[in-house]
Amino acid sequence: MEQKPSGRIERRLAAIVAADVADYSRLMGLDEVGTARALREHRKVTDALVEKHGGRLVKSTGDGLLLEFPSVVDAVECTIAIQAAMAQRNERLPIDRRMLFRIGINLGDVLIEEGDILGDGVNVAARLESISRPGGICISSSAYEQVHSKVSVEFTDLGEQNLKNIARPIRAYAAAPRKYAHRLVAPQSSAPRLSIVVLPFANIGGDPEQDYFVDGVTESLTTDLSRIGGAFVISRNTAFTFKGKPVDVRQIGRELNVRYVLEGSVQRGGTRMRVNAQLIEAETGRNLWAERFEYLIADLFVMQDELVSRLANTLNVQLTSAEARRAQGSNHPDAMDLYFQGRALLNREVNFGHLTQARAFLGRALRLDRGNMEALYSSAVADLLTATGYFTDDRTALLRAAETALNEVLAIVPDHAQAHGILGVVYMHSDRVDQGIAEFYRALELDHNLAWVHGTRSG
Image 1 (cartoon, rainbow, N blue to C red):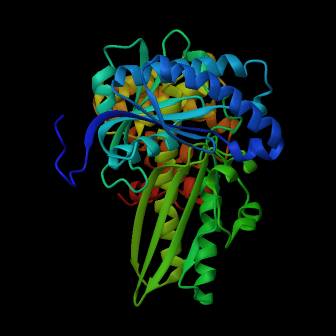
Image 2 (cartoon, rainbow, N blue to C red; image 1 turned 30 degrees about the horizontal axis):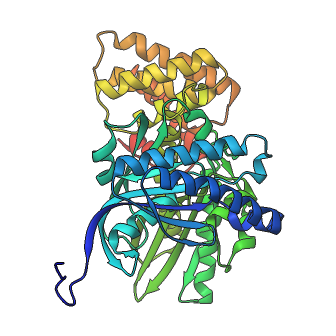
């Protein structure tokens, strides 16, 4: 028998599956004995399915499992079967008592050590599991390339993900069986669309004089985000109960019933001030956006206004994009789903294709709900951009349609600052300069942070 070279590290290519139970600590808190018993019963089912599909249990840690398969196809088919079985077992249980697995799958090189598997390939699978929806499966692009045409599974491209402690971005895909996809989706979050809490920004360095500035950023940002159409923003008083405390964004999301959490920090160094901010999806803990801002310290109030304005405008775009991505997965989109998809297109590069798609989404939204003022306002923006970008031969008709829609919005929502601003642009392009300027002033009275209105008025 051939002997392995002494000291050589054994490696092999493998399909790695990492799984755990979502909200296991909460379930244990509700019923420790019952939860432990239910997990043991579920494990009998999952162990049998792993064996049937040629996999092996590498190790289990509490509610977590690490599995290895020689084939990615077998790994995906096994996990699909596991989630289908779990969906059936959960059907008769109350939603808050259901045990839902999160599963991550990666195809990668692993190190073999006394039956255990180690290495970056394992770490990626574990991180994919952490961003998977409860009841869902998340796979890496390396696994996707091997299985997407070989299994009866629907894949949703989640884009590149920055995973914790993984040096490079990993492209990820959500997987669900075509036939039983509706049974594998976790109960929809009851959190309202565009719901967010702005956690008190951390004062790095602890300078008490800087506390006023840091708290001011949090308060002003809370106010400005509440001006976003359709946004639900947790009050400053509630948010400040978390000041100075270690936080679990998933727990905060459940406690406050919000979809998004914004957190950040402020650090002063000499004559400069650095502000970091990140937007997090509360349900998964996934980082959706992060940015760093740096300023020379001068007038703190002016700097605070500029910072808050930049953050609020950027977050408006990021939150709209996040809601649009959610809406893309809906088989039966409602008016708000269609609105977010249309609005997200308006935030992209202005071209004929984007505007045409945006107008189509917004038109469908209004046919479902004419009372959706944000969709009506956005349809006016789409008409205005189409007219002023010379993407139409009937510019006058589109300007007239935009004006009619904006007046309808302002009749219902007279303090809609953005609508006043856009109406001002319509007036300017219709040779009614004085009326346009008056609308710009009214928009800025309602929201002085509308940078585009400042720029348009000056121009």
